[in-house]
Image (cartoon, rainbow, N blue to C red; front, side):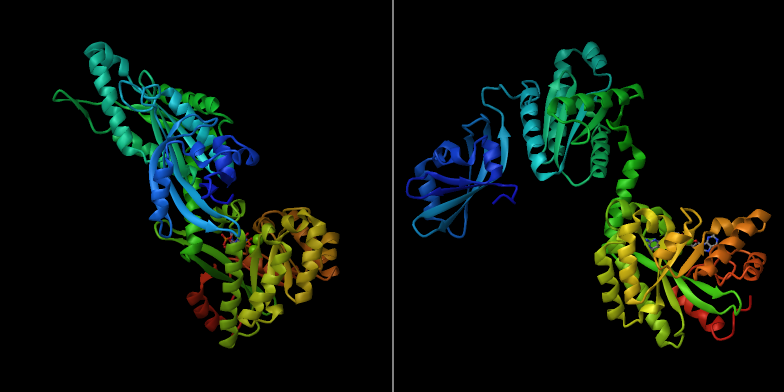
Length: 544
Ligand code: C2E
Ligand code: MG
Ligand code: MG
């Protein structure tokens, strides 16, 4: 009962006394679970009569809906339009009825206390009531609520030159247009003067709010016609969000107003979020975030493969799998743009598992074609390094029927060292499966060989910044030479990434770097092109 957002009441059909209510209902009424038992159903649904209820119950077939206005009697003393859905449930000694209340939508009192006379829409008090209610609901459902503070630009000019009557008509037309635009669950109210406040409830994410504000601005692109004349007026809109921009109704309104003033300062006819971090770039990020979530479902990811060769024989020894996002409008997007975001929003495991599965599958196909000595290196994010990951690896190897030694996991130095104790146990478990571990971007982090020894790492991958400078700076040669020597002494293999020139390749080979990867050998290739590349270069050694 508590897992639904609706209010649920159970009452006895013998005496119409309430037996229980869920937390949503208790919160709404401001009662405790004990207090509710002292009430009858007619206390709660005060305008429902026994006759009405009995009638509904008689025609009840798999749930009957009844809709009426009633006054919540308890602490929230407001009128509400509700739909009640009834269902008979039976326990051993009693016949009970379950009532689910849909859409408690508070209405203004008929005496006008809650409506604005000029525009006939909710006034400031009703707005605050609804906002408070929305905040308490938001605390429970953990969703965003949003306040838009809309102030008309240069309204005073209209009022002064055309008179107050004209001004009132204009306000009414604006209110009607806003009202027609917003959804049933939202509230538009006149806050005073030329200010309107809008409360938005069902908001999946912040990007949607930005789009909505843009559409609100467009509403004002059409003229308002009064007495056959067209008038144009624009708004300035300030936006605040619960819970980000305020803990209560007053603070949210105040902050939305502050944001509105910033719009005014910049010439009006625009919108702005209170929180300056919620600016365009954040919105872009949120749009990207939305797209990224969809990308996983729409299979928009592709894997490219970049060959790695042996320095002495120049033969291809393995492939690094590198993900790309094939966006329908933006084209190929680099992992550097979306992997950090995927990590931040918790999508990396899903994406990472896909990469692992696809990389193993493609490699198996290559093995079946006869290129059976190749391995595949897959990049793993720190966030993937959880104990479940070990099982995922086992499962994928089984499914793709790939022997574990052909899977190399590339883990960056920083993520391996981040929580060394945690890494130790995971690395140990991975080693037990038989997969190989490479330390990616070596030299950019702690560069602590002794830890890597403890972590039973197989390969050190020297970061491409070292390789980039190797021809320019003799000191750099010394550093790379020392890394290679030390790594060999400790029993690690060494691979250099970012090899872009023949001289780099020759130098690294003379320094006894085992394997090499980089644009000079090949750029990362989509699978079809990789097939061509390998079929030319695998048997003969690459002609480098
Ligand atoms: P990384 O693992 O260090 O991958 C090597 C990057 O260097 C790749 O960029 C590759 O295209 C690029 N590269 C290769 N040869 C050269 C060269 O000669 N010169 C230069 N300047 N660059 C070269 P890419 O594909 O854009 O990937 C960037 C990073 O994104 C990767 O760095 C890796 O950290 C991450 N990444 C890529 N795919 C995945 C994935 O499937 N999962 C995770 N978690 N991260 C990934
Ligand atoms: Mg890598
Ligand atoms: Mg790297």
